[in-house]
Image 1: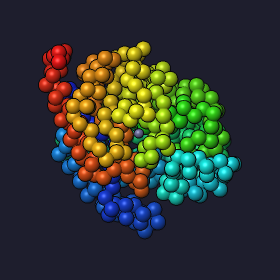
Image 2: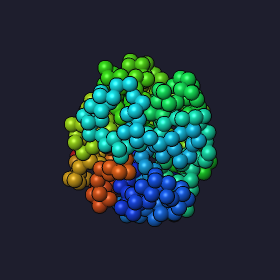
Image 3: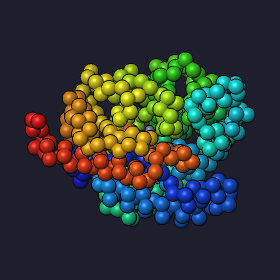
Length: 398
Ligand SMILES: [Zn+2]
C-alpha cells in the first residue's frame, strides 16, 4: 500500500534531526538520573515542535518527530523495556574478548566510545511501555500530515542487545532473544498502526556491515556483542530477513519500509562503509515490506543500476541528499537523480528522502538544523518539478 493523501514523489525524512543544546543538556541529566523520563519528555516536546516546524516549512509530506526523545535510533528502547541497561561502549569494553581489536575498530570507524551507548540485555525483556506510540501520539496532536515512525530492526536490535557474558543468563542464545524481540516489535507495529501512523520504517543499517565486512567477526560498534555472529554473510542476511518478516507478516493497513545505509556517525566519509546495494538486494527484496529506504546521494552507495535485475518490485525511498555535508544539493541535480531511478521504478513508487537522519546519535549530529532545513527545501523543490512533469503518469520528453 502507498501512504494515502500524499502527492506523487512524496518528500519524507529517514528519521532523526539534530537536537538543540537545551535538549542535549536534558538528555545528559536524564542519563545521569537527575531527570525522570516524564521531566525529560516535557523538555523534548519543545524540540519536537521545532523539528516539525522545520519539516513543514520545508515542504515535507510525511513528517517524523526527529527522534528528539531518543539518544540514538536503537538504544532508546532502554527507556521502554525492562531487562535492558544502557552501557557505554567504554563500559562494554570490559566484556569483550578481544579488547585491543575492539578498540581498533572504534578508532578506525571514528566512533566515540564514551558518547555512544548500547542497549544491553541484563535480564528478561519486558515491554514496560510502547517503544514509539507515545512519540506518535504527541506528534499527531500537532500536525495533520502523515507521520513516519522509525523503529530499530529486529536483527540490529538482537545483535546489539545480546552481549556474551552479560545477557546469556536471561537468554542463553541470541536466537532466544530474537524471538522475544520479534514479539515486542510486532506488537509495536500493530499499536502504531491502530494509533494512525502512516509509515513504519525498520532500521537495519548493520546489514551493510554484514555484507561488506564478512571477514571481521567483531564488526561494527553498532553490534557490540563480540564474536557472536556466524561470520557468514549469507547466513546472517537470511536471519535478518526471517526476523523482519516475522515482525511484519500479515500486518495490513500500514506502510512499512526497511532502511539500510552504510553508517551515519562520522563526517569522515572514509570511516564509513562502501559498496553497492547489488549483493544485498536479493535479500532485501524478500523482506515483506513496501519500501526500501536507501542512500544514493553518497557515491559510497554505488549505482542505481543495482536494480537493473530487480525492477519495480518494491517502492524506493531514494536518498537524494547527503546528511553529512555542508553543501546543499541543487534541485536540478535531485531531479536528474530521480529520473535515473525511473529507469527501474514507476513514478508512483519513488519517495524522496535524505540518505539517512541528520542526527542519528544525539551527541554527534551530522549537521545543523539550518543546513538540514535547506536540504529538505531543495528536495521539496525537486519534487514540485517532478510532479509537474509526471502528473499524467507518464512524463514529458525533455
Ligand atoms: Zn541510515
